[in-house]
Image (tube, rainbow, N blue to C red; front, side):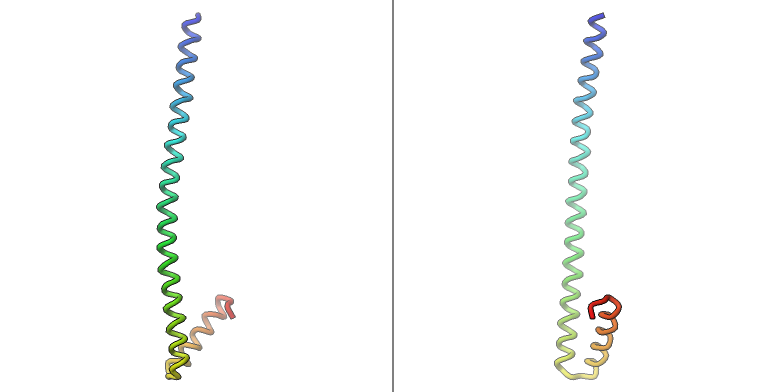
Length: 87
């Protein structure tokens, strides 16, 4: 009877050890995926910020040149700001 209890204890202990190892492996894979996602988000934010800075620079340049394009650009910019709540 002791042999059965000992074997059951060993099997249970092995199950717990493998369960912990599997949980750690799953956590590691999740962290790796999060790192990739964060990197992709940072790259996307860089592109968006770069585009916004370029647009703002264009609007300032157009406003300072006094060209015909200036009125159109300013009008478009104001409409966009009104829609987004920036004005």
